[in-house]
Amino acid sequence: MGTEGAVVGGRYRLDQPIGRGRAGIVWLAYDTLLHRTVAAKRMYVQPGLDPIRTEHLINAALQEGRAATRVLHNSAITVYDALRDGQDPWLFMEYVPSRNMEDFLTEYGALTPDQAAFLGVQLASALSAAHRAGILHRGLEPGNVLLADDGGVKVTDIGITGPGPNPAFRAPEILRGAPPDHAADAFSLGATLYLAVEGVPPYGDNGTGPLRQPLRAGQLTGALMKLLREDPMTRPTLADSITSFQAITQGRQTAFIPPTAPVLPTVPVAWPPLQSPPLQPAATKGPLLTPAQVRALILTVLAILCAAAIGIGITQVLFL
Image (cartoon, rainbow, N blue to C red; front, side, top):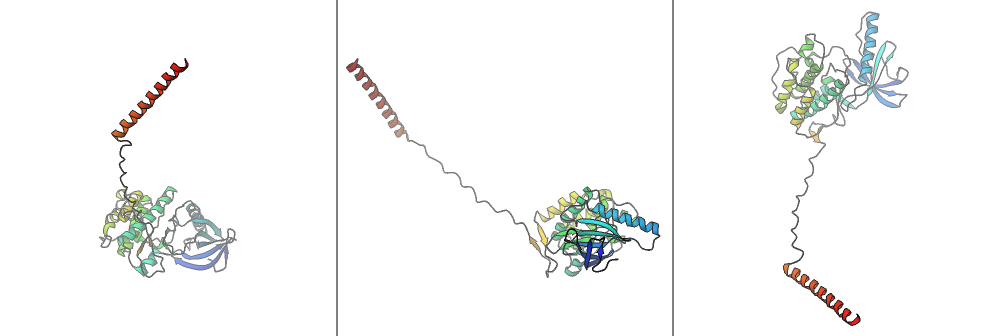
């Protein structure tokens, strides 16, 4: 199960618990081979099954963890390793000082539409990177969105099966038994952002109630309602949603105040470009010579030529 000071897989030392989710304890650990701090957690395997079924689930969990190492994006937690220690599969990931969005909202309250739109850009971009790697998240919800102490946003548990995903953030077709796909991840994104601004899930705690019309989403309402459509064929793509979210933020890049701060405003991290000074019209230059000066110059040249001709004539008379 993992205890403080234990070494997992002959390599990773468990130093201290730093969080707990439905899948169990998340540990701050130390990689004794590469000498770096990592996050570690025992992957979920349903208890109480027969040995053959348990063995199958262990192998499936390890396969999920190794596949997740292909997802590389600034807004996705990087998975370093997945290995088996006895009967336990373990996952080792990038460690980011943070707290999950669920806890953050409980402490600080709902986000503004502008903040949620910025958050949507980061989450949709991370999901898009996972989809390009051939991996679905299958369980995006506030509990696996991390708001980092440095203002960044990280998605965790991409492609990792957990115990009983929260139905409030599952697409309607998934609750009816359909297989997950890109559109289901898009719905989970919409439901997560809806909770961020409204404080409650869009279809209720069990995901089967009537859609609650948003009251606080403001300019974000249209983008959210499209993601939350019951028919997956009519939901926008993640790329289209990113475009919508960026339009809402009007190109302003904002970041979250670290969770240790007392309030949650936004802070600009990119300022408007400096205005260049207006170009001054070039001064109009006058003519190089006036007409009188031109006439004088011509007469001077003619005089010189006449003098030269006379000199040549006198020379011929005297010496020839």
